[in-house]
Length: 493
Image 1: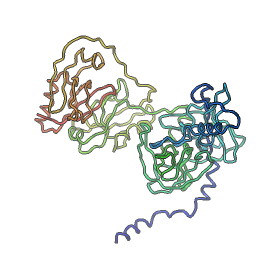
Image 2: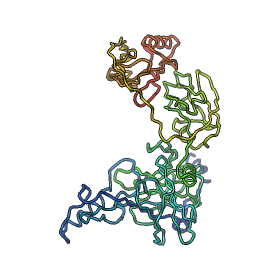
Image 3: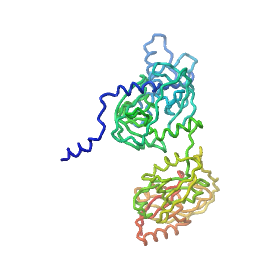
Image 4: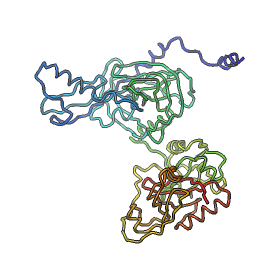
């Protein structure tokens, strides 16, 4: 009965294609080899090859060694482009007194017959010269018209003698786990290579950046495939192959592609402005843990907890506060915290959108006007003015920490801003409750249960009030050198 049930549900699925040959033949001419070269250090520095007599067996040995010096780096999540010359690039020029060119090979694809090529930023980053090679071995010099390291995307322009074959974007949101896909690229500098597989997973976060939302595929992707397209069975680009997870440098069926839905927005901006223009809200956020949800009276763990609001930023102007939980942005429900940076970034600058938040046990809706993400947001720090005043310490042994009021001595010791207020953590017991939650000496507790505090007495009173109200934990707003974050701490008598 179970087997029959599976058969019935599977009847609507598309059968495996008998061959990918017709599709590959159509798509291959639009996929290109991207070669970038960088002028490396001159002779006499550590990168140079030692001089050997012509014909010496050591000469070829060291050439091979230098060609592969950027090769297999072991396990981890790697950008899959060919590093150095190990993808078939020319050997470096090692004549005495000369420098040499370090060459990297990757992939790309044509999206406009006039000569617009898309690839990964890490394929061409820092390059002095970029060329593309077409399927018929025509070599064209390329110029970079825009690149973005956050999304790892770049747009190149070549000037062909005649219109080039181009591919079109597909809808990555419509692709499902289990759908067939084709990857075409330039693995190890071998030229146009086609591999097939399925969409293995959606929405992967591989810790490569704030906007991670990768498509995972088991289609073979190797070094040199970076920047190449991932196609659906209609021949539309639904992803840009960017990274692999591999313990040995080769494909083990864990490839990751930037979805076309995300890439198209950035690519269009790079073509228009030469840079990406992202929406900006101006908040620092963290996940909603079960302890935090219980403390705030939330039924689930959806949303993003605000742990800091940028002065004069869009969120502050919309009256967003520390301790608010952002539940939805412009109609998009936030099932995960990491969804917020992506949807904000994709929102049109200067547009006014609704922001649903949870505050003091109630749902509120605020209107926020999205601004453009600044290039740099470094906080300014005031100079310390050390004075010797002994702090009055309070021992919270049950929680595994000691606290003290802010003093000039503690400001000097922990390099705190001159204008800070709150309570300073002076000691943390190893393996205690505070240590388990990442608290450290020098951390500053500035709020308890979303109320500002200025002394250990106020902290103890807030904890006592929480215990009287039946709370299992209290929510501390903690500031350190990395910024603000909310920390739930169990209530103890």
